[in-house]
Length: 411
Image: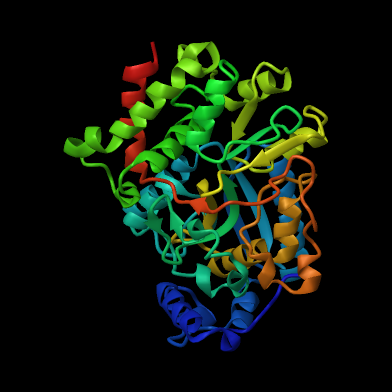
Protein backbone atom coordinates (compact mmCIF):
# COMPACT_ATOMS: atom_id res chain seq x y z
CA UNK A 1 0.00 0.00 0.00
CA UNK A 2 1.18 3.56 -0.56
CA UNK A 3 2.67 5.40 2.38
CA UNK A 4 1.15 8.64 3.67
CA UNK A 5 3.51 10.60 5.89
CA UNK A 6 2.64 14.10 7.14
CA UNK A 7 5.01 16.94 6.35
CA UNK A 8 5.86 17.29 10.03
CA UNK A 9 7.65 13.93 9.78
CA UNK A 10 9.70 14.97 6.75
CA UNK A 11 13.34 16.02 7.17
CA UNK A 12 14.04 19.74 7.40
CA UNK A 13 15.22 19.99 3.81
CA UNK A 14 11.95 18.43 2.61
CA UNK A 15 9.86 20.85 4.69
CA UNK A 16 11.81 23.73 3.16
CA UNK A 17 11.07 22.41 -0.32
CA UNK A 18 7.41 22.02 0.58
CA UNK A 19 7.30 25.67 1.61
CA UNK A 20 8.78 26.62 -1.75
CA UNK A 21 6.18 24.47 -3.48
CA UNK A 22 3.42 26.23 -1.55
CA UNK A 23 4.77 29.59 -2.61
CA UNK A 24 4.61 28.51 -6.24
CA UNK A 25 0.98 27.49 -5.67
CA UNK A 26 -0.09 30.74 -4.01
CA UNK A 27 -2.80 31.24 -6.62
CA UNK A 28 -4.69 28.20 -5.41
CA UNK A 29 -7.83 28.68 -3.30
CA UNK A 30 -8.41 27.61 0.27
CA UNK A 31 -5.62 25.92 2.21
CA UNK A 32 -3.24 26.25 -0.75
CA UNK A 33 -3.38 30.05 -0.57
CA UNK A 34 -2.09 30.21 3.00
CA UNK A 35 1.38 31.59 3.63
CA UNK A 36 2.18 28.54 5.72
CA UNK A 37 3.00 25.37 3.77
CA UNK A 38 0.22 22.77 3.90
CA UNK A 39 1.12 19.32 5.19
CA UNK A 40 0.59 16.17 3.14
CA UNK A 41 -2.75 15.46 4.78
CA UNK A 42 -3.97 18.87 3.56
CA UNK A 43 -2.73 18.09 0.05
CA UNK A 44 -4.66 14.81 0.03
CA UNK A 45 -7.74 16.61 1.34
CA UNK A 46 -7.50 19.26 -1.37
CA UNK A 47 -7.00 16.54 -4.00
CA UNK A 48 -10.15 14.60 -3.13
CA UNK A 49 -12.76 15.18 -5.81
CA UNK A 50 -10.31 16.68 -8.32
CA UNK A 51 -9.92 15.44 -11.88
CA UNK A 52 -6.33 15.12 -13.07
CA UNK A 53 -5.80 15.28 -16.84
CA UNK A 54 -2.60 13.28 -17.42
CA UNK A 55 -1.10 13.84 -20.86
CA UNK A 56 0.89 10.69 -21.55
CA UNK A 57 2.19 8.73 -24.51
CA UNK A 58 -0.31 6.09 -25.61
CA UNK A 59 1.69 3.97 -28.04
CA UNK A 60 1.67 0.76 -26.01
CA UNK A 61 -1.25 -1.41 -24.91
CA UNK A 62 0.67 -2.42 -21.79
CA UNK A 63 1.34 1.20 -20.89
CA UNK A 64 -2.27 2.19 -21.43
CA UNK A 65 -3.48 -0.72 -19.30
CA UNK A 66 -1.10 0.26 -16.52
CA UNK A 67 -2.36 3.84 -16.54
CA UNK A 68 -5.93 2.53 -16.33
CA UNK A 69 -4.93 0.51 -13.26
CA UNK A 70 -3.35 3.63 -11.70
CA UNK A 71 -6.56 5.55 -12.38
CA UNK A 72 -8.64 2.91 -10.60
CA UNK A 73 -6.30 2.87 -7.60
CA UNK A 74 -6.11 6.64 -7.05
CA UNK A 75 -9.90 6.93 -7.44
CA UNK A 76 -10.49 4.19 -4.89
CA UNK A 77 -7.86 5.30 -2.37
CA UNK A 78 -7.72 9.08 -2.71
CA UNK A 79 -10.93 10.09 -4.48
CA UNK A 80 -8.93 11.51 -7.40
CA UNK A 81 -10.27 10.98 -10.91
CA UNK A 82 -7.44 10.39 -13.39
CA UNK A 83 -8.06 10.94 -17.09
CA UNK A 84 -5.43 9.65 -19.54
CA UNK A 85 -5.13 12.20 -22.34
CA UNK A 86 -3.47 10.08 -25.02
CA UNK A 87 -0.69 11.81 -26.95
CA UNK A 88 1.91 10.79 -29.51
CA UNK A 89 4.45 13.58 -28.96
CA UNK A 90 5.15 15.36 -25.67
CA UNK A 91 6.44 18.36 -27.64
CA UNK A 92 2.80 19.08 -28.54
CA UNK A 93 1.99 19.40 -24.83
CA UNK A 94 4.87 21.83 -24.35
CA UNK A 95 3.52 23.94 -27.23
CA UNK A 96 0.02 23.94 -25.72
CA UNK A 97 1.17 25.06 -22.26
CA UNK A 98 3.39 27.70 -23.87
CA UNK A 99 0.44 28.98 -25.88
CA UNK A 100 -1.71 29.14 -22.74
CA UNK A 101 0.94 31.24 -21.01
CA UNK A 102 1.26 33.53 -24.04
CA UNK A 103 -2.53 33.94 -24.05
CA UNK A 104 -2.39 35.07 -20.42
CA UNK A 105 -4.27 32.16 -18.86
CA UNK A 106 -4.33 32.28 -15.07
CA UNK A 107 -2.25 29.87 -13.01
CA UNK A 108 -5.32 27.69 -12.38
CA UNK A 109 -6.81 27.64 -15.87
CA UNK A 110 -4.56 25.21 -17.74
CA UNK A 111 -5.72 22.16 -19.67
CA UNK A 112 -2.86 19.89 -18.50
CA UNK A 113 -2.48 18.73 -14.90
CA UNK A 114 0.27 16.15 -15.29
CA UNK A 115 2.59 15.27 -18.16
CA UNK A 116 4.89 12.30 -18.81
CA UNK A 117 8.14 13.96 -19.76
CA UNK A 118 11.93 13.99 -19.93
CA UNK A 119 14.82 15.27 -22.01
CA UNK A 120 14.50 18.37 -24.17
CA UNK A 121 10.79 18.75 -23.42
CA UNK A 122 11.53 19.09 -19.72
CA UNK A 123 14.46 21.40 -20.41
CA UNK A 124 12.20 23.67 -22.48
CA UNK A 125 9.43 23.80 -19.86
CA UNK A 126 11.90 24.48 -17.07
CA UNK A 127 13.71 27.16 -19.06
CA UNK A 128 10.46 28.94 -19.93
CA UNK A 129 8.99 28.75 -16.39
CA UNK A 130 6.14 26.52 -17.53
CA UNK A 131 6.35 24.17 -14.53
CA UNK A 132 4.86 24.11 -11.03
CA UNK A 133 7.21 23.40 -8.16
CA UNK A 134 9.56 22.41 -6.79
CA UNK A 135 7.34 19.59 -5.58
CA UNK A 136 9.00 16.23 -6.33
CA UNK A 137 11.19 15.86 -3.27
CA UNK A 138 8.36 16.87 -0.93
CA UNK A 139 6.39 13.78 -1.96
CA UNK A 140 6.39 11.33 0.96
CA UNK A 141 7.46 8.41 -1.22
CA UNK A 142 10.40 10.28 -2.76
CA UNK A 143 12.51 9.19 0.22
CA UNK A 144 12.59 5.69 -1.31
CA UNK A 145 13.99 6.86 -4.68
CA UNK A 146 17.49 5.56 -5.43
CA UNK A 147 19.07 8.98 -5.95
CA UNK A 148 22.58 7.60 -5.29
CA UNK A 149 22.56 4.49 -7.48
CA UNK A 150 20.41 6.17 -10.13
CA UNK A 151 21.67 9.77 -10.31
CA UNK A 152 19.49 10.40 -13.37
CA UNK A 153 16.52 10.58 -10.98
CA UNK A 154 17.77 14.10 -10.20
CA UNK A 155 19.43 14.89 -13.51
CA UNK A 156 17.49 14.79 -16.77
CA UNK A 157 19.81 14.70 -19.80
CA UNK A 158 22.35 16.84 -17.91
CA UNK A 159 19.66 19.29 -16.74
CA UNK A 160 19.16 19.29 -12.93
CA UNK A 161 15.53 18.52 -12.12
CA UNK A 162 15.53 20.80 -9.04
CA UNK A 163 12.35 19.11 -7.83
CA UNK A 164 10.36 20.22 -10.88
CA UNK A 165 9.61 16.67 -12.08
CA UNK A 166 9.12 13.39 -10.23
CA UNK A 167 10.82 10.17 -11.42
CA UNK A 168 8.70 7.11 -12.11
CA UNK A 169 10.64 4.80 -14.45
CA UNK A 170 14.12 3.90 -15.65
CA UNK A 171 15.80 2.96 -18.89
CA UNK A 172 19.39 1.82 -19.35
CA UNK A 173 21.47 0.66 -22.29
CA UNK A 174 21.57 -3.13 -22.13
CA UNK A 175 22.95 -6.01 -24.18
CA UNK A 176 21.49 -9.50 -24.44
CA UNK A 177 22.43 -12.82 -26.01
CA UNK A 178 21.92 -16.56 -25.78
CA UNK A 179 24.15 -17.50 -22.86
CA UNK A 180 24.87 -20.89 -24.43
CA UNK A 181 26.44 -19.17 -27.44
CA UNK A 182 28.05 -16.32 -25.50
CA UNK A 183 29.04 -17.56 -22.04
CA UNK A 184 31.42 -14.63 -21.44
CA UNK A 185 29.74 -11.38 -22.51
CA UNK A 186 31.90 -8.28 -23.17
CA UNK A 187 32.10 -5.79 -20.32
CA UNK A 188 33.32 -2.72 -22.22
CA UNK A 189 33.61 -1.33 -25.71
CA UNK A 190 37.21 -2.58 -25.79
CA UNK A 191 36.02 -6.12 -25.04
CA UNK A 192 33.28 -5.76 -27.62
CA UNK A 193 35.90 -4.90 -30.23
CA UNK A 194 37.94 -7.95 -29.22
CA UNK A 195 34.83 -10.15 -29.54
CA UNK A 196 34.03 -8.69 -32.96
CA UNK A 197 37.52 -9.58 -34.13
CA UNK A 198 37.05 -13.13 -32.86
CA UNK A 199 33.53 -13.45 -34.34
CA UNK A 200 33.56 -11.34 -37.52
CA UNK A 201 30.20 -10.47 -39.05
CA UNK A 202 28.18 -11.44 -35.97
CA UNK A 203 27.88 -8.07 -34.20
CA UNK A 204 26.28 -4.81 -35.31
CA UNK A 205 24.23 -1.84 -34.09
CA UNK A 206 21.32 0.15 -35.59
CA UNK A 207 21.89 2.76 -38.26
CA UNK A 208 21.80 6.30 -36.92
CA UNK A 209 19.65 8.31 -36.26
CA UNK A 210 17.86 5.35 -34.64
CA UNK A 211 17.80 6.19 -30.92
CA UNK A 212 19.47 2.94 -29.82
CA UNK A 213 22.12 3.30 -32.51
CA UNK A 214 22.89 6.84 -31.34
CA UNK A 215 23.04 5.56 -27.76
CA UNK A 216 25.60 2.95 -28.81
CA UNK A 217 27.76 5.74 -30.23
CA UNK A 218 27.29 7.89 -27.12
CA UNK A 219 28.33 4.92 -24.96
CA UNK A 220 31.48 4.56 -27.06
CA UNK A 221 32.09 8.30 -26.75
CA UNK A 222 31.87 8.15 -22.96
CA UNK A 223 34.46 5.35 -22.91
CA UNK A 224 36.86 7.17 -25.25
CA UNK A 225 36.58 10.89 -24.43
CA UNK A 226 39.55 12.29 -22.53
CA UNK A 227 37.38 14.07 -19.94
CA UNK A 228 33.86 12.77 -19.44
CA UNK A 229 32.89 16.02 -17.70
CA UNK A 230 32.97 17.69 -21.12
CA UNK A 231 29.86 15.73 -22.08
CA UNK A 232 27.66 17.40 -19.47
CA UNK A 233 27.82 20.65 -21.46
CA UNK A 234 27.10 21.47 -25.10
CA UNK A 235 30.05 20.71 -27.38
CA UNK A 236 32.32 23.52 -28.50
CA UNK A 237 32.46 23.44 -32.30
CA UNK A 238 36.13 24.33 -32.47
CA UNK A 239 37.06 21.47 -30.13
CA UNK A 240 34.58 18.86 -31.39
CA UNK A 241 37.01 17.15 -33.76
CA UNK A 242 39.71 16.76 -31.14
CA UNK A 243 37.29 15.63 -28.42
CA UNK A 244 35.74 12.93 -30.63
CA UNK A 245 38.90 11.77 -32.43
CA UNK A 246 39.30 8.66 -30.25
CA UNK A 247 35.64 7.74 -30.86
CA UNK A 248 36.08 7.69 -34.64
CA UNK A 249 39.34 5.74 -34.29
CA UNK A 250 37.48 3.12 -32.26
CA UNK A 251 34.66 2.89 -34.81
CA UNK A 252 37.14 2.69 -37.69
CA UNK A 253 38.70 -0.31 -35.95
CA UNK A 254 35.33 -1.92 -35.13
CA UNK A 255 33.39 -1.54 -38.37
CA UNK A 256 35.37 -3.92 -40.62
CA UNK A 257 34.48 -6.75 -38.20
CA UNK A 258 30.75 -5.99 -38.00
CA UNK A 259 27.86 -7.54 -39.91
CA UNK A 260 28.39 -6.91 -43.63
CA UNK A 261 31.74 -5.38 -42.87
CA UNK A 262 30.18 -2.29 -41.34
CA UNK A 263 29.04 -1.17 -44.79
CA UNK A 264 25.36 -1.58 -43.89
CA UNK A 265 23.47 -1.30 -40.61
CA UNK A 266 20.03 -2.62 -39.58
CA UNK A 267 17.32 0.03 -39.34
CA UNK A 268 16.35 -0.61 -35.72
CA UNK A 269 17.04 -2.80 -32.67
CA UNK A 270 14.02 -5.01 -33.44
CA UNK A 271 15.72 -6.17 -36.64
CA UNK A 272 18.90 -6.95 -34.68
CA UNK A 273 16.91 -8.87 -32.07
CA UNK A 274 15.35 -11.02 -34.79
CA UNK A 275 18.73 -11.69 -36.43
CA UNK A 276 20.08 -12.73 -33.04
CA UNK A 277 17.09 -15.03 -32.48
CA UNK A 278 17.77 -16.58 -35.91
CA UNK A 279 21.41 -17.17 -35.03
CA UNK A 280 22.78 -14.70 -37.57
CA UNK A 281 24.04 -12.30 -34.90
CA UNK A 282 25.67 -13.05 -31.56
CA UNK A 283 24.11 -10.32 -29.45
CA UNK A 284 21.44 -7.60 -29.48
CA UNK A 285 20.96 -4.31 -27.68
CA UNK A 286 18.11 -2.38 -26.12
CA UNK A 287 17.35 0.62 -23.94
CA UNK A 288 14.80 -1.33 -21.89
CA UNK A 289 16.60 -3.72 -19.50
CA UNK A 290 13.47 -5.87 -19.25
CA UNK A 291 12.95 -6.33 -22.99
CA UNK A 292 14.93 -9.62 -23.11
CA UNK A 293 12.84 -11.05 -20.27
CA UNK A 294 9.67 -9.99 -22.08
CA UNK A 295 10.92 -11.79 -25.20
CA UNK A 296 11.71 -14.92 -23.19
CA UNK A 297 8.25 -14.84 -21.58
CA UNK A 298 6.69 -14.54 -25.05
CA UNK A 299 8.84 -17.53 -26.17
CA UNK A 300 10.48 -15.48 -28.91
CA UNK A 301 13.88 -15.99 -27.22
CA UNK A 302 15.17 -19.08 -25.38
CA UNK A 303 15.24 -19.36 -21.60
CA UNK A 304 19.05 -19.36 -21.83
CA UNK A 305 18.97 -15.68 -22.81
CA UNK A 306 21.19 -13.47 -20.64
CA UNK A 307 21.15 -9.67 -20.30
CA UNK A 308 23.94 -7.45 -19.00
CA UNK A 309 25.36 -3.95 -18.80
CA UNK A 310 29.03 -3.05 -18.94
CA UNK A 311 30.79 -3.45 -15.61
CA UNK A 312 31.66 0.26 -15.25
CA UNK A 313 28.16 1.33 -16.29
CA UNK A 314 26.04 2.15 -19.29
CA UNK A 315 24.03 5.17 -20.35
CA UNK A 316 20.67 5.44 -18.68
CA UNK A 317 17.94 7.94 -18.13
CA UNK A 318 14.82 8.39 -16.10
CA UNK A 319 11.37 9.31 -17.26
CA UNK A 320 9.34 11.62 -15.09
CA UNK A 321 6.01 13.28 -14.48
CA UNK A 322 5.75 17.06 -14.17
CA UNK A 323 2.99 19.52 -13.32
CA UNK A 324 2.49 22.60 -15.54
CA UNK A 325 2.50 25.98 -13.81
CA UNK A 326 -1.20 26.50 -14.64
CA UNK A 327 -2.56 23.06 -13.75
CA UNK A 328 -6.08 23.17 -12.34
CA UNK A 329 -5.57 20.11 -10.10
CA UNK A 330 -2.13 20.66 -8.60
CA UNK A 331 -3.00 18.82 -5.40
CA UNK A 332 -4.45 15.85 -7.29
CA UNK A 333 -1.43 15.75 -9.59
CA UNK A 334 0.91 15.53 -6.59
CA UNK A 335 -1.13 12.73 -5.09
CA UNK A 336 -0.90 10.80 -8.37
CA UNK A 337 2.86 11.44 -8.61
CA UNK A 338 3.31 10.19 -5.05
CA UNK A 339 1.27 7.05 -5.75
CA UNK A 340 3.46 6.34 -8.79
CA UNK A 341 6.42 6.19 -6.37
CA UNK A 342 4.72 3.73 -4.02
CA UNK A 343 6.12 0.20 -3.78
CA UNK A 344 2.75 -1.11 -4.96
CA UNK A 345 2.78 0.95 -8.17
CA UNK A 346 6.49 0.51 -8.87
CA UNK A 347 6.38 -3.26 -8.38
CA UNK A 348 3.43 -3.64 -10.74
CA UNK A 349 5.15 -1.48 -13.37
CA UNK A 350 8.38 -3.51 -13.06
CA UNK A 351 6.46 -6.78 -13.48
CA UNK A 352 7.01 -7.92 -17.07
CA UNK A 353 3.49 -9.35 -17.19
CA UNK A 354 2.15 -5.79 -16.75
CA UNK A 355 4.82 -3.52 -18.25
CA UNK A 356 8.40 -4.43 -17.35
CA UNK A 357 9.61 -0.87 -16.71
CA UNK A 358 12.50 -0.85 -14.18
CA UNK A 359 11.88 0.79 -10.82
CA UNK A 360 13.37 4.08 -9.63
CA UNK A 361 13.27 2.89 -6.01
CA UNK A 362 16.11 1.64 -3.83
CA UNK A 363 14.67 -1.65 -2.61
CA UNK A 364 16.96 -1.62 0.43
CA UNK A 365 15.05 1.42 1.72
CA UNK A 366 11.70 -0.37 1.63
CA UNK A 367 10.07 -2.32 4.43
CA UNK A 368 10.35 -6.12 4.15
CA UNK A 369 6.68 -6.31 3.15
CA UNK A 370 7.08 -3.75 0.36
CA UNK A 371 10.34 -5.33 -0.79
CA UNK A 372 8.55 -8.65 -1.13
CA UNK A 373 6.35 -7.13 -3.84
CA UNK A 374 9.37 -7.25 -6.17
CA UNK A 375 10.84 -10.55 -7.49
CA UNK A 376 13.44 -12.00 -5.13
CA UNK A 377 15.67 -13.09 -8.03
CA UNK A 378 15.88 -12.11 -11.69
CA UNK A 379 13.70 -13.88 -14.23
CA UNK A 380 15.23 -15.51 -17.32
CA UNK A 381 16.43 -12.72 -19.57
CA UNK A 382 16.62 -10.09 -16.82
CA UNK A 383 19.85 -8.33 -15.85
CA UNK A 384 21.32 -10.39 -13.02
CA UNK A 385 23.70 -7.72 -11.73
CA UNK A 386 22.82 -4.12 -12.47
CA UNK A 387 25.64 -1.75 -13.41
CA UNK A 388 26.00 1.95 -12.59
CA UNK A 389 23.80 4.32 -14.57
CA UNK A 390 25.89 6.76 -16.59
CA UNK A 391 24.22 10.12 -17.33
CA UNK A 392 23.31 10.95 -20.91
CA UNK A 393 25.65 13.43 -22.59
CA UNK A 394 24.09 16.84 -23.03
CA UNK A 395 21.40 16.72 -25.69
CA UNK A 396 23.39 19.15 -27.85
CA UNK A 397 25.93 16.39 -28.60
CA UNK A 398 23.41 14.33 -30.57
CA UNK A 399 23.13 16.44 -33.73
CA UNK A 400 26.88 16.85 -34.42
CA UNK A 401 27.57 13.18 -33.58
CA UNK A 402 24.85 11.96 -35.93
CA UNK A 403 25.97 14.37 -38.65
CA UNK A 404 29.59 13.26 -38.46
CA UNK A 405 28.66 9.57 -38.25
CA UNK A 406 26.53 9.97 -41.38
CA UNK A 407 29.36 11.72 -43.20
CA UNK A 408 31.83 8.96 -42.32
CA UNK A 409 29.79 5.75 -42.48
CA UNK A 410 26.39 6.16 -44.11
CA UNK A 411 27.52 5.32 -47.64
